[in-house]
Length: 575
Image 1 (spheres, one colour):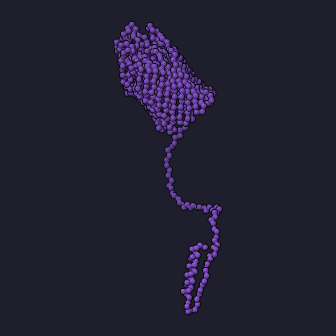
Image 2 (tube, one colour; image 1 turned 30 degrees about the vertical axis):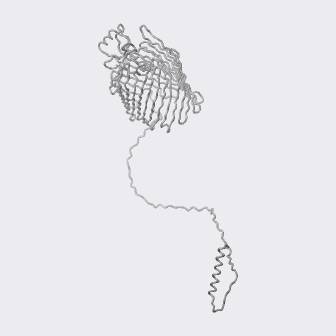
């Protein structure tokens, strides 16, 4: 027992004793005396030990019942008319027609005829034929006769083997143009009739006969070397008597190992050219073989592509020369191909043949000289991507240098027989020079499947030359816009617009060839095209084409204007 409790009990005992003494009755004659110590005690308490225990008992599920008050709504019956549905059934493969013909006629006595014929579907092989004729009497005023005609026939055969595809082509192309770049009047016409100059003084005809073959591997085994080998041969000549035979062999080899690809490109280009000048000079020959090897290796990931290679060329045109060009490319995909930045470096050696030059500019002299070009470097970078499934874009900036680039300049054509003072329209020759080009370009495309397709492109360029005073006939800026609208496969509307800025042209020599000459500026122009086609049935349709809708009188080459407002209409039929 604690000391405090003892004190309390003692005090209680004293208090009780005092109370008894005070309560004593003196008349009773009694007295109580208490002596000694009083020690009270408290008995032990019997405590009950009750601790919490967990009841491991599964409570029974009490079923819950829901009652729904029965209610009935009276809805009056109503019958609506339903328009009949049209069910259009299409075969899994649409019907293909073997043949297709197109014919038309336009202003300036301009007939058009075109034929396509194909085998349609086959598991093992296919073949086809394409023939076309297009001509016109020109119809240009104040210049010489400007009639022209184009004729071409192209046939092919393709055969599928178990692991390869083999294809062959036969090519024939004939193009006739007129040297009409001179001021025409009655005295000139009388002079022509009197002197009867050679045919190639007033016109030029280019004939191209060739064939091509190709074999391509179709195997999907990455352990094997994939290959694509092609051979193309052209025999090209003109009315003057110049002739060229070109044999071009190409091969692309590649092998895949995981995410990496190893490849090699091979080029063997042999060209035999004999230019006929006539007179005392007669003819001259330029023969040579251009051999190239283009090894490369690339690696591809989920978001990136890196490719590194080189171009190694040996050119034996005239004297043998060696050329080496580094090649590289890298791109990275952002936001699942929404934005793809890319950079690259490219260089190559390319052939300028008699055929390629006259295809670019048909009003050349009868025997132009040939020099191959080198793209020393083309350093570029850009950004491409898509805003949606319908809108895509590509913006690019590049800086390049081309050695021996062909620039076309005007020179007088050969004099008339027996009168050297009489010269007709200007001919053109290639002037080779080194050209530095800085280009900023962009392309935007909007596409809605089977309905709308719009493409716009803008290129702005600056040029620096080493020998020539200007980059002759190269436009400082060019804008092209094209659109196609298909209205339910019945009415198809096509539109194109091309705008070229002012271009510098070299005119006639004033003192002597190549010493002093005129520098002219050709006006910029806007050329609009509109095409309409109405498909009466799946087989039969009619069309209307209008070229140079703005009726602009402009010159793409100096003293060679284009036709104004050519309107051509006709029909097509599939069989």
